[in-house]
Amino acid sequence: MTQKVKNGRILINNEWNEAQSGKTFPVLNPSTEEKLADVAEGDQADVDRAVVAARRAFETGPWKKMSARDRGRIIYRLAQLVDKHKDELAELETLNNGKPIFETKNADLPLSIDCFEYYAGLADKIHGDTIPVTGEFFNYTLREPAGVVGQIIPWNFPLLMAAWKLGPALATGCTVVLKPAEQTPLTALRLGELLVEAGLPPGVVNIVPGFGPTAGAAIARHMDVDKVAFTGSTEVGKMVMKMAAESNIKRVSLELGGKAPNIVFADADLDAAAAGAMMGIFFNQGEVCCAGSRLYVEEKVKDEFLAKFKARAESLPLGDPMDPKTRMGAQVSEEQFKKILGYIETGKREGAKVLTGGGAAANKGYFVKPTIFSDVKDEMTIAREEIFGPVVGAMTFTNTDDLIRRANNTMYGLSAGIWTRDIGKAHRLAKEVKAGTVWVNCYNCFDAASPFGGFKQSGFGRELGKYALELYTQVKSVWVSLN
Ligand code: NAI
Ligand code: MG
Image (cartoon, rainbow, N blue to C red):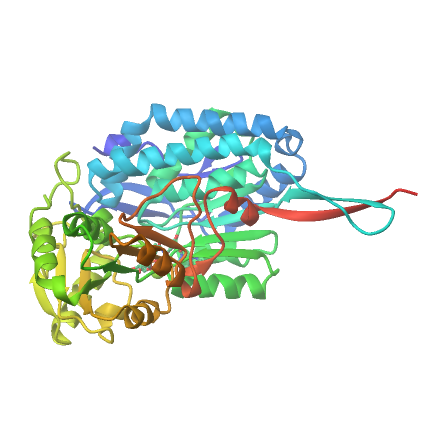
């Protein structure tokens, strides 16, 4: 399988480089714990070179002079190249991340291609306004690119997160230094090859694999990076904001953790809700920032609902992620695996009941059994902290006002799910829940056109759709005297 890994180097100015330090780091297959590749370990020196390339490309390169429509054409060619190589990319993603090939083929790849296509089409539709000001003036706004953008992305959807970041940055005419997560740099590097093939001018996208405290921090505190976009933990999000503040006040957007309430009313279609609860917590092994990890079930249907949910969880085929029948793969790393198992033990210790699962699933590879806890209380650790694994805590409610207060009683606010046949109740709750995305009678729905992002400590700024243009442009107001 390792022959699929062609490239483990740093992309600067459309050229592939070793790290200046000469260092590399091993990248593993989490389902076998075997090494897939040695990848160049970029750090401050490589980030510095990448920023110089991005700055030159932004200020003086052909990218600056190119029409927005031609930028769109290049992004479209990239979308077509990703489409052409989708099977290879899906396999590479599954090997590196541990998620099932079923998911990479049916979610990660189609969503990444859609994202590039969407921003290809949007590139020439970005414009300012004319504003009817008082007095003899003509006033208009220009939407200009933010400049050199640093993008630091996580390991849970490696290629898709690269697409969410690169699509709008390229559509707006920014240039980029992208740092993939150290666990999963391989699809971003393959994407770099496709970017060059698509005709992107040198320096427009530079890709520096490496670790957070070195390469990531070098981006966040760089004096010549105009904006940093980060997806990852709330803890590191705070550090990125601080580094931005202490360096050059670069603009920041953050997409951080979550602890989403998924709310099942007695009047819901309970089979659909059980399928949705499954999708909400077991999709991508629960390594999803918007995972429905707090399950609130109306008391009177608790037993019926949990029986359905448990049966479904126990029927999930777990195993070799490359097997098309597999629906539960491996967690991304030993660190995450151990963290999840630690939370499962904490849940047991604090008095929650294991309805199903409750531990590791294999001797080799980082597999965790789909785990449902019942009799969970709001104040338990597993109901408050982001686990980022296939572990859900079920709680019950009787009163809707009380439920809303409990659902909102979290530092996070990324997403929420609501299951009911009562449309009035659905819309009222959709308004009252403090979250950037609300799914009614569905879960984990995504489209390149619809915005995604957090309230509270889940971050700020909206990715996707036209909303992402705000992240990568700045507005200039121009006054012209008419006298
Ligand atoms: P992390 O936040 O440390 O890593 C995410 C990205 O930030 C990676 O590219 C990493 O190299 C980079 N990074 C790490 N430290 C940095 C620093 N000091 N300066 C700049 N960049 C830095 O997340 P980690 O440690 O991989 O996972 C820990 C927890 O974070 C997970 O268990 C999960 O709860 C949460 N998480 C949330 C994600 C989301 O989608 N919102 C994605 C990944 C993790
Ligand atoms: Mg970390």
